[in-house]
Image (spheres, rainbow, N blue to C red):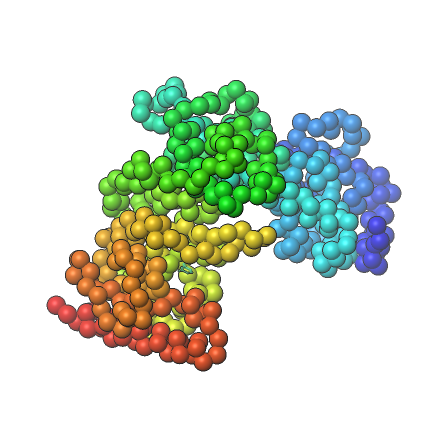
Length: 494
Ligand code: URA
């Protein structure tokens, strides 16, 4: 491996330590403990301990091999220089440490050490250490993706201490890497209202709708197999399966056979591959789209939408995005659905469309912070293209299903005026499709006496260029100005 002049200087500085012959042994307390690794690595760098003077030992690993080694963390001198590590390194390292490769701790340290002399090393795509770090990161992300997609919960009998009727779901999963803890938040948000356990050979997670507990490793036999939910999964999967799109090679790559045994719907695959026709959703036919009582608070809606699986969008790798703003706002602004950035941040209209919306709202003198901003559909619908998630418009059925939530939000906020941006938002408010050019610029009465105003969606403007964009921006501004004026009138109305 080629070292730069900065790295050579660092090597020379560290000679003193080498001469002293101190050999450090770092026993990791957990295989995924990035913070512990980071703290130790910082102290070691500040004490000029080169990579080949450290043995990083996995939890349960044989640290006795290094009985002559120093186990205490070295104490950096008071004038030690701060450790350099750029954001890219830290982000990759935080993920790569979850890999099952025993050498990962040493690799991370070697890179951190080299970063001190060559801060731009992470930009060198040909560097073997950087390449290896990227490989580990990619493998871990892939493993997490598989876990999100292929964990299947099964209903179990009430356990000791549980009331009959308190349903408990258990899933078995075999990750390739130490990803269980890192993914706890994902499953907690997605299945917030369910009591569930995820069992793996590395450990287990238990969620009781309020607290998360960690438990010991489990075996496959600890998880149940077969229950009525499986039938539902099977019919659901069959209903969304589109034989015209089937690519067997791609399917096997995405859904390795290893996971099939945990997935009730996988039993259908041979039949589906043989050419089964697309079927109507058994869930819809079974009437499972009926909702229960409307939640009475915005936090209750927030919790419920995270658990909502009434349409297939909620089964993608995404998180529900709740509306935000005062719960008594006079103006409610409704968009279509969260985009990629909204899904990642959990907030509506923070991406490019949101930024354009902010510009126009400001121009119209409408204070976004005083408005309640939300979406007709709560989950991000997309198709994966390589690393990118490309927006897909929700279908009429999906908008109609999600209407329950946006209507529940409206029932609580009780805005005087609702501004629906785009055709999906208008459908979400009216339950039918309208032509924007026909209805914009004038109020539509809603059942509770409030008013609906319809305008274009800001992302429509983003797709246009030149004079067409200018024209649409002008119309959008005019709609917002009319809304502002009407809000002022409504504020004065008795
Ligand atoms: N587009 C929308 O309709 N809503 C968002 O939250 C972001 C983009």
